[in-house]
Amino acid sequence: MCLGAAWREVRDNKDFDKVLDMVKTINSKGLEVCATLGMVTEDQAKRLAEAGLYAYNHNLDTSEENYNNIISTRNYDDRLNTIKNVRKAGLTVCSGGIIGMGEAIEDRVGMLYTLSLLRPQQESVPINALVAVEGTPLAEQPPVPIWDMVRMIATTRIILPKTAVRLSAGRQEMSLEGQALCFLAGANSIFAGEKLLTTPNPAYNQDMEMFKLLGLSPKKAFADKPKEELV
Image 1 (tube, rainbow, N blue to C red):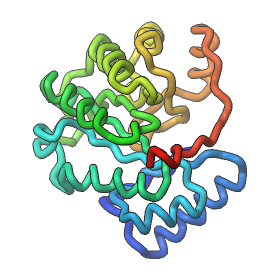
Image 2: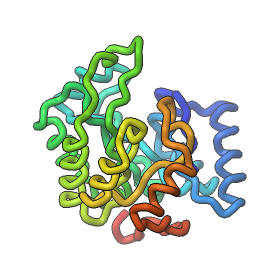
Image 3: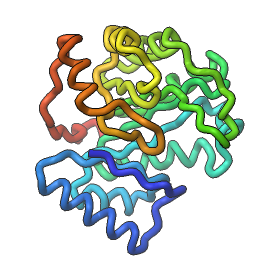
Image 4: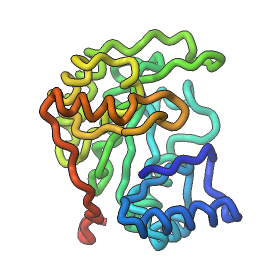
């Protein structure tokens, strides 16, 4: 279960205390808990780990060269420092990006190259297709061609062989055949539920029917922690 908050960074206040309580409660139910809360300090990451958090998501979004064209609320080093703080706390890392924001092919390669340099290799990498939202600066961006998603997933699979590749945002606009190609290209995880943060997501029953048609079996929950010698 993934908890998301629309924060630039975590602050040591009652809101963070509530998140810690949520993590403890969900963890006590036998569920793995992931959180994406914005930038965190090493101490905050440790408090999350002590509460029972399994994974922390903090996407790079795009290449370092293209980053300032997309985001102004923080810089690329802020992203990388948060990932380092999460690792130091002994949490698993989930970090990926978005395609379809007007970036060049070189920017997609640059993002994957940066992710490939993380040590140890992150446990999961979400590959998102931009969902254009009316009223935002990227509202007029054309839909991401399915072949672009297939190529991105296949390249990620090769570059990050030990990492779970997550077929993430944008699935609502993909056909069953398109998603099947993404699985064949190397995707081995999806986000299930009605909404993925702020954008629509296929219904759970719809995903289960897709799995049945494609002969895929959902993996049972597990809770492997990063190996100590790699942290």
